[in-house]
Image (cartoon, rainbow, N blue to C red):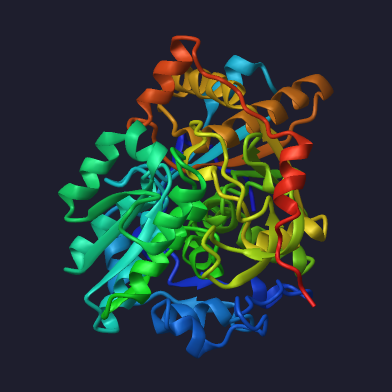
Amino acid sequence: MATKEIPYKIYLEEDEMPKAWYNLRADMKVKPAPLLNPQTHEPATLEMLSQVFCRELAEQELNVTDAYIEIPEEIRDFYKMFRPSPLVRAYCLEKKLGTPAKIYYKFEGNNTSGSHKLNSAIAQAYYAKKQGLKGVTTETGAGQWGTALSMACSYFDLDCKVYMVKVSYEQKPFRREVMRTYGAEVTPSPSETTEIGRKILAEHPGTGGSLGCAVSEATEAAITHEGYRYVLGSVLNQVLLHQTVIGLETQTALKKYGIKPDIIIGCAGGGSNLGGLISPFVGEQLRGEANYEFIAVEPASCPSLTRGIYAYDYCDTGRICPLAKMYTLGADYIPAPNHAGGLRYHGMNSTLSELHEQGILKAVSYKQTEVFEAAEQFARIEGILPAPESSHAIKAAIEEALRCKETGEEKTIVFGLTGTGYFDLAGYAKFNDGDLQNYVPTDAELAESFAKLPKMD
């Protein structure tokens, strides 16, 4: 196909939007290891998962054979409010860097929730409503997921109980207020409202919390309240599945203009946006149709892929959720209360972990001052204030572009700009004042956490 003149923003038509999510596991010869029952260590069954998750979501979690799963029409109609999202050519950034590389970013911040999270939130709320539930419970780190789910639940008239990591609850009061405006009940985690929260507070007085803590509280709240189920914003394969609308749209937009990417980059916390972006391209590679370089970018303060262990671990600090085989820092690991926000999770999605184990997915990590420097540079050049999470991918994209400048290679780089940073101004304020501190866990700290991993037969 001949290359057309590339506009600044590539938009798809509504009829070019995906009609089905792509299930990468169907094309993987070596599948991710199954979730395990936390008590018996036997593979999790549909009945077991359905006690925690909506039944159709549990079915999606266990599905490793169907390459495509149809997106219900009601969800597709909702998507049309903010999708297709634009694929943007970063011409100004290329010029400023003086690089021969071509840089594109898929911008997911064009909705009220401010991030990609709405792609899965509306799907999970839809299945909860379809099941006849009263409401759902969830956790949120930086607040993007809680905001998105609050919006989705208000659309379907569902109750929404959000356990927000305490440090983010305090750092980002305006994000909290958006959730409350949409009708959500927001509780700082760990809290005194659950048995697990009280236990964590007793063991870690004054803690700022973690996503693992918040997951435990939200799960306990779901299983102890009739008519509620727990929904999760990342980590699980069902969430990664919903986020493949990002990669499928990106793939269609690139092919529309005859563009072949060389490097595809995403920030990585639990793995949903990264997995959503790269899955269709990984599928091409696994089928022998193309070859790409995939890069996961994580915070140096919570480096599960770059310094973690590939092992079965609990998905939550309270040890009530299923065990997942993943790259993990240990369920007891509580990261520093920095501005990496939603990337402060102790483990990585099992599919992405398996891809990393196979050498298909590369991983790098950066300190938060480096990340904010990249965010500032991007904001001044491209005119979008990025979320701190997204800025990890920006940092890696800039590094790859500068490498091309050194070598003279004309590579095409695509990265995910997962959301905007307008609710993250406390972090930007600290950066501008020179008060932003880096934290990197020591080997001894990680070893202490690894020693508490579950003993498997």
